[in-house]
Length: 320
Ligand code: DGY
Image (cartoon, rainbow, N blue to C red; front, side, top):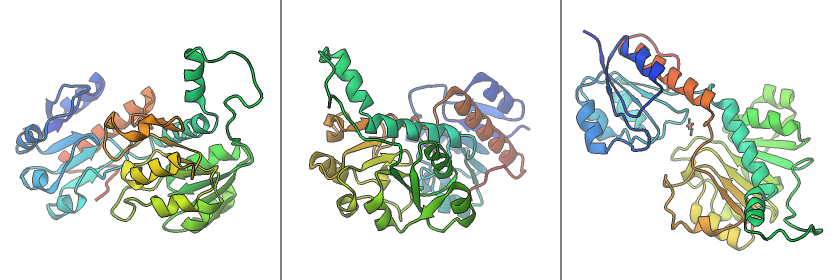
C-alpha cells in the first residue's frame, strides 16, 4: 500500500504528480488560504508524511496527535514553525529546503538595501502623486551604498551570498556569527566583529540569523541606540528577531535612517501596524525566495524530502 501524505497548500501540478506516483496524496487545494489548525490536526492523524509551509504551526499537540507520522517536510529553509524537540522525541524526521533559495533571497535583501537607501518607494509614490514639479538639488536625496560598511548578523549561506554582492559595491564588510569562519573571511575579505561593534560601525545592518529563543528581539531598544543615525536596518530572516516597537521608536525618533523588512512578528502584518505609516520603512510581504524558478525548486526539494522520508530513506536535508 502506498504511504499517505498531506500537502498543506496547492503546489505546481508536476510536483503533485511526482508525489502521487509514490504516495496517496491528500491536498489542501488552496493558494491563498492556509489550512485551519483543527483541520490540519484532523488530517494529520492518518498520514505518514506532511509537506507544509512556514504558515503551518506544527506544534507539540499536533505532532503528538499524529501517530503514523514519519516525516515533516517544510517548504522553507527556516523551520521555527515546527516544534523540533517534540518531533525528535517521536523519531519524526524534519526536513527543510536550503541552498536552492540562497541567491534569490540574497537578491531580495540587496533590493531592500537599495530601496531603503535611495528611497525608491517614496520616490515612485512622489512621482505618481504628481509631486514632481522640477529637479532640485536635494530632492529625495538618500544614502550611498558604494564604499559604505555593511554589517551582516548571521553569516550562513545567504549571508555569504549577500557579502558577494556587496563586494561589487566596494563595501567594507563585517559580520557577526556564533562561530568565526576563517576561510570565508579570507576569500571574501570580510572581518569578524562583536555584535555591539558591528552595530556601531555599520551603515547597513542586515539580519540573517535564524529565529530561535536566543535571537528573539536580538535587535531592540539598546541595539538601536548603538547604531549610527544614518544606519539602515534590513531584515529578510524572521520577524521576531527585530523588536518592532523598538524599531518604530528608532525610526520615528530618527535614531536610525530607514529600515527594510520582508518579515514581521505577525504575518500577514496587521494593517494597523504603526510601522506602515512611516515613509522611511519599506515593507514587503515575505517574498525573499519568491522567484518562479526558486519557488519551483523549493517545492521540488520539499517533495523529494517527503518521498524519501515516507519510504524510509534518508532525505537530503534533515534538520533533526
Ligand atoms: C524560508 O525559506 O525560510 C523563507 O523565509 C521563505 O522562503
